[in-house]
Amino acid sequence: MRKPIIAGNWKMNKTPEEAAVLVKDLIPLVADAKCDVVVCPPAVCLSAVKSVVEGTNVRLGAQNVHFAEKGAFTGELSCDMLKAVGCEYVIIGHSERRQFFGETDKSVNKRTVAAVKAGLIPIICVGEMKDEREDGYTDAIVAYQTLMALTGLTPDEIKNVVVAYEPVWAIGTGLTATDEQANETIGVIRKAIEGRYGKDVADAVRIQYGGSMKGSNVKGLMSQPEIDGGLIGGASLKAADFAQVVNY
Ligand code: 13P
Image (cartoon, rainbow, N blue to C red; front, side, top):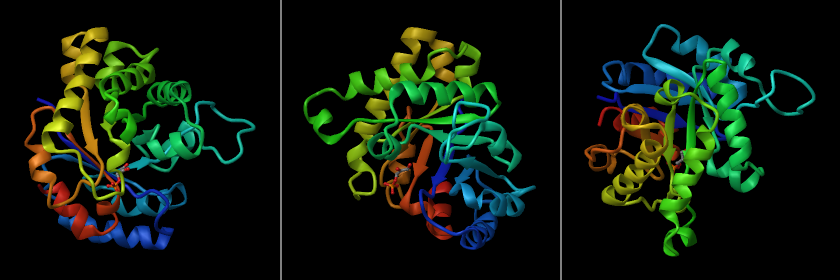
């Protein structure tokens, strides 16, 4: 059985001080969570959040990582830097990075491999645009993005990664994939992993849904057999809202 994992992607929100307040409020509300709970604040907040979540069941993740160990990569952060401030997880290939910052399937793969080799758990984001769904390319796109991201990892390493299926048209729009749509596409992702790496690997990988997931729709989504959790944007920015999702 896969343990569900609910992660908050705070995106470019919160100062370190605000971040510390948010997790302080969150910790008692999610102390009895049955799923893994992760928060992914902006990089400048990681240290502040680490000191608050230490010793609790709330785990820390970053929103991106570079593949090189160090060097002339202005604005980037290495795996070792993230681990040094307490990160265990890192989001890779979010559609906002793909759309606005030139992230490609190749760079997502390089970041993923570097993260895994360094002992970080990647949360690899995949998902189709609205027109791609309308034109019938969803399955091909999510399968390709997923398999590309995983290239170069061993089957055992793949068992430990997290994939987040985030249809781009559902992010921050209030539109959610229906429970059935999300379940079906996550099933496609799992089948693609099975086709390349076998059923035991595919059965182990946790695949989240992301895109306007919140307290009012979490139950339906989480009751679907293929959906192993959520990657939450807007509803992760208030402790009570995020707790409602975590405690579905
Ligand atoms: P929203 O929950 O705000 O739609 O964002 C989803 C997301 O992009 C999480 O990574």
